Length: 227
Image 1 (cartoon, rainbow, N blue to C red):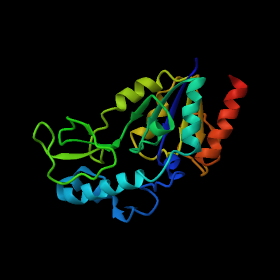
Image 2 (cartoon, one colour):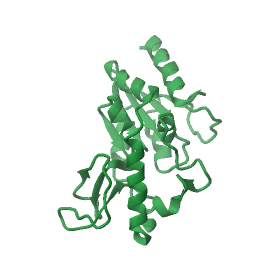
Image 3 (spheres, one colour):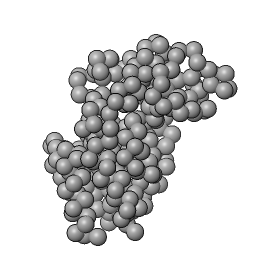
Image 4 (cartoon, rainbow, N blue to C red):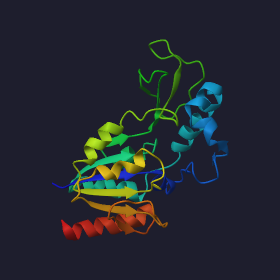
């Protein structure tokens, strides 16, 4: 069974109605990105951070996986699939994908400030001052700017096993995730699904110039002809 590794980004979730944090000149849902997506922002104003991620969870509860998520999940019937996602939503899980690495954390979880004691809270709002079992303050289970990406090494090891790599919904501008496909074997087929012009690629990549849903439909049909 061939191994496909998907590297997904905000563009795939955008088709479900979740806005991306790079859409509006430093703002994300009208919040300054540095105030709600950096560890410095947490130290400056944790109440604001909690409010922001409560709103994101509430929004997530109102949207559903789209065609791209569904096709990726369905491909598990024919391929060994791992999804490496930069997204913090749970739309891949809800579509049925079973093997997912969340590089940047998970919106429906909270943790102690040292990243231990991870708890799934679903879509409920958390309050500032809630404590983890170890007595530390709870915080969103999100990897912010200025923090290490703890699952990056796991993602590298998976990428090294790929027969096929599919990059979907990501601008390839957020590092270190943007460099992950460089770890794929030289003989791996690499596809990029993106409706925009992409110039920051360093390997021979077949570009499918479509949005996520339409692009995944085309790719699925192509894979059916090859395998």
